[in-house]
View 1: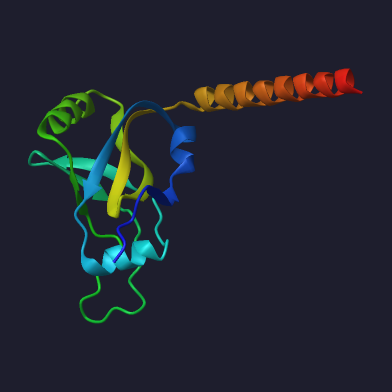
View 2: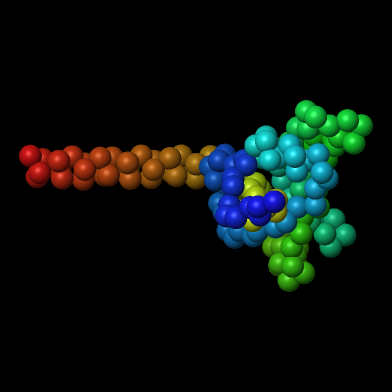
Length: 159
């Protein structure tokens, strides 16, 4: 059997970058059952409502939707169970200290396979206010307009 190489993205949480200021990111492994892995290999998952939680010195991933495996039997998993994340002790201690500060939370950004192992990119984030979201959208629109103007000027020079 050939071993997988590289990174294969399964699910992304695009809304998280809109709703939160991303302060730091961590790569964490996941403790999964066999049917969860098979369901992920089919490319089926959703991170939309997911969040990280610290319980007893361990970090858990809540509300991530991994649907039941279609070929599974009585051994199938529940779709929204809490899943343990694997991090180094120093990273866990850092996250425990940061999440105790007000307004900080743990948000999953990307769920992927890296060299055949399921990983999640976890972000330490702080919630944005509505005016921050509007400001971010305004900056993106200004950047797009500037890029369009530059590319139009380049086209005129070539012609």
